[in-house]
Image (tube, rainbow, N blue to C red; front, side, top):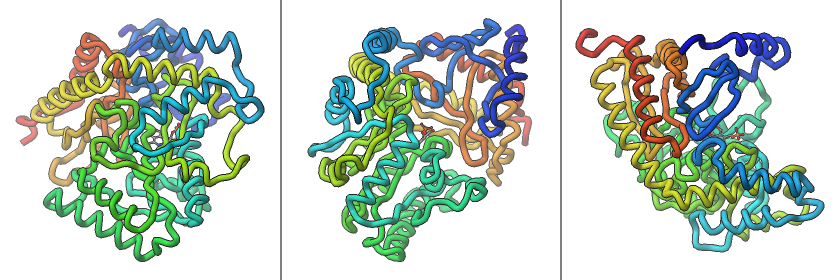
Amino acid sequence: MPQVPGPRSRELTRLREQYVARGVDEQHPVFVASTQGATLVDVDGNRYIDFAGGIGALNAGANHPEVVAAVRAQAERMLHASFHVLPYEPYVRLAERLCAITPGRFAKKVMLVNSGAEAVENAVKIARYATGRPGVITFENAFHGRTLLALTLTSRARNRDFGPLAPDVYRCPFPYLYRSGFASEPETVAACLDAFRGLVEEVGADRLAAAILEPVQGEGGFVVPPAAFVQGVAAYCRERGILLIADEIQTGFYRTGRRFGVEHFDVTPDLMALAKSIADGLPLGAVIGRSDLMDAIPPGGLGTTYGGNPVACAAALAVIEVLERDGAGARARALGARLLERFRAWQAMWELIGDVRGLGAMVAMELVTDRRTREPAAEATSAIVAEALREGLVLVKAGAGKNVVRFLGPLAITDAELAEGLQMLERAFSRVCTPVSRSH
Ligand SMILES: Cc1ncc(COP(=O)(O)O)c(C=O)c1O
């Protein structure tokens, strides 16, 4: 790669530093100019393989031609009218489609919003109104967004500084097997379920509207819970009349190899929050759930000016068509198998890789400075991500310790692009890592 960041990127970075708030950070100081499938080109003409997918928003592949055609056709007819003034067809067609493809053989309804955090906010709002209860249970290491309630539901040490946070939010342990401290998976699950049931009884089920759960924790570092845990939470929620909200914003639309992450656990949530890959990068989110809950709120109680924008809806309808037709689930499972195999081979080579885990195409490596203490290797992770970029590979980190390298690229990535990206990542590791044999 000639020069990364190149002169145009450096020039734009100066503008960015002067005019864009510091808190809006970026993983790489490289300005992207165009995207296609799983490749990106920056403003200096450098080409990259994309393992980030705009943070998991591009399962169908960036600028998928059928999505672009649908967007263009809709944009020529109407950019915006607001569904709250005059309804339009793409909104109701998408609502119908989402009801058909989401789990749950009961009557469902939909509301459309603009982002993941907004979907989470509205799911909780609906759960509170429908049950008449204030409390929400969330889990340690969860990520649900950055608006005030979503931020409160999210586990981040820095959140306290944004306080006061939203009230009536309770946090429970999540079975993060690599870091649980228990000797076995059943012990971890039992301890987490005990804590969950204990919290419900301590707060009182009659004060709890819902529990919100990511089927696989995304920003937390691709933490896959054992099925027994998700099933145990769902069963106890049902028993105590607490609603279950699945945050499928990152896991949805075949990322995990099934349409939605909960399908791996045979669990049917009462409400789901969707966003990211729903519309190939256009801003769109959705809450979908049992009709009786969705309709508990009277007319005028839900809404937003742009929610379910017609262009975003047209994109989503095209995305769903493409994913269903092209066998995205099988592709995600195949990609996942290749990634797991390669990551495990690297784990045998490099001491730095403490854990390899994943579900479908949601596969990650957790990097540690010492395999015994499992101290997060944040610096080495940053170094690998930076080296990878110089090689021509775009990655986004994850994990509370900023020490997880993950694959979140388009499911539409070609075999050749995947192989090229993995070669680049391997070279980045080999520059930063000490081989296992030399470290003892
Ligand atoms: C599981 C999950 N929930 C919610 C969000 C927030 O979505 P958005 O950034 O669109 O507000 C994210 C974003 O990363 C997410 O991964």
